Structures are given as structure tokens and as C-alpha cells.
Length: 357
Image (cartoon, rainbow, N blue to C red; front, side, top):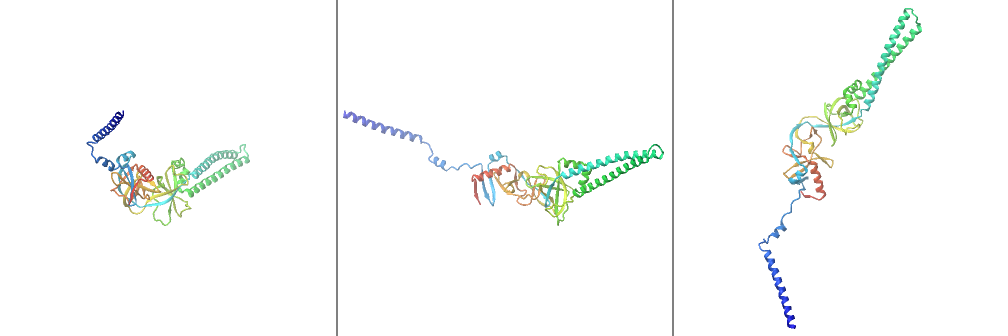
């Protein structure tokens, strides 16, 4: 019995050793043909770069974005065009209320209508007086009292007409003192220009040129709510009012109505003065606003964009005229600039910037 137990124990040990040897052999076969450096290469392979990242160079933000990301946000770029422009003067302006003009027009129409009525009454009274006088002179059945009454009625109506005409003339003079001769005539005549103003298709704007400036009021200017709405305004006439904030000469302009151009809103007007200078026009579609400043993205490489500040003190049709920081050699982002700014803000929020030089 002891011999059998010893034999079975020895057989189990041998079977275990054989199994371990077989497993070792199979493992060696599976590893045959593998490059021993593969694992090292996997560990040392560079990570795939993110679709966008930011860095800083010479104080400017550099945004790097791959082609697929650019297509996703709809980036389009365009070359800047060189042009000449005269220096711009910036002077304050204010949108005026047309309520006074509407009230004047209503009062003027009522007074003019009353005069017309008086003239009709005078014509009737004159005929009655002439008939009474003719009957009285021919000694027909009419008394002197009746004749005197007819004459008195005629004279009273004529007096009322003269007073009404003087009142109407006084109203016209007051309108000229408040609005200038051109607008006063519009209001008295009920012109199409007045209809456009009262119909809120156009607005009246007071522009004040400070004393000491030698330039005259130009025929057309640009007026704007800074950073929001711009429109071209046309000179009407000198304006016989003074802006209490500024000592200067005032002029009256008209401009197409805009949602931001409500009565009392302060505007800035721009117009050319002096000699022309050379520069480029940065399209309005390329301009984004951040931190109270205007910026544009320059394409500095196929995948790189640099955000650069630009001056907006010389607005022109379609954009801004600048003489520094941009040239005809530059391309700017004309579509998708706001998306780049948003992407930049997201990357900064996640600490996605590179090294700052």
C-alpha cells in the first residue's frame, strides 16, 4: 500500500512539471517573429496634436488650428487692398427729436386753415356789404343801421385775417430760429423731406464743430454709435442751437433711420480733413471686439493666425482705414473671425496656451 501511494505522488509531480514546460514552449512560440523594439516605439511615439492651440509671441496671441478645424468653423481669408485716405476728424453729434417739428406742423396747418376760412368769410361779408350799400344808395328799403352792421362785420373779419397772418408769419420765424431756414421751410410747406422725418424713415442729427477748428462742415459725414451702428449723413444747413456740452458751431444733418438712432442718443461723427495718406482697408467682417478694443486675425501661416489690434478712428465704407499694423502683404480672416475669438477663449479657459515668449 505504501508503495502505491508513493508511486501516485511521484506521477503527479511529473505531470505538473510536464504541463509547465508545455506552457513555456507555447509562450515562446507566440513571441517568435516580434520586433523587441515595438513596445519601446509605442511608448515613445508622439501624441497626436490637438486641432487648435494658442501661444504668445511678441505680445500677440497666436492661434494654431489644423485644416479640418478651419473648415469646421468656416474660416475664409482675404488679402488687404491698399488705398489712400484723408485724415479723419471725430466730433460729437446728437440725434434730435422730431416731436417739436410735428407740433409746429400741426399748429401751422391749423393757423393756415383758419386764415383760409377767414378769407372765405371776408368774401361773403364783402358781398353782403356791397349789396347793402347798393340798396341804401338807391334809397330802397334798407336802413343805415343795417349798412353799418354789414360794414362792421366786414372790417372785423379783415382785422382777424391780418392778425392770423401775422401769427402765422411769427410761427414761421420761430421755426427758423429753432431749426434753420431749410427745415423751417420743409415744415411750413409740408415737403417730402419732412414726411420722411416724421415717418421715421430719416433722423435729424446735430453735429457740433468745436471753436478753433478751421475746417468747414462737409456735405456728407459718417455718424455712428461706436462699435454698433454706422450711417452716412447729409448736410442740411447751419443749426441755430448750441450743444451745452460743447462750445462750437452746430450743423444739422439727416441720416437714414437706424434702430440705435433714437432721440437723445450721442453719436460720433467722422469726416475727412487735411492731406491724404496711404494705408489699407480692413473689412468690417474681419473685425472682432474684445476687452473694449477692435482686433483682426492675420493669417501668418497655413495653420496659424495672429490676433492684432487695429485703430477704428477712420471708418470708411465697408471697414476701417488703417496706416499701421497692417499692409497689403497681409491676409486677414474675413469670415469666421468671431469663431476664432471664441476658440481662443475656450483654449485659454482650459489652459491650452503654449509657451509665452
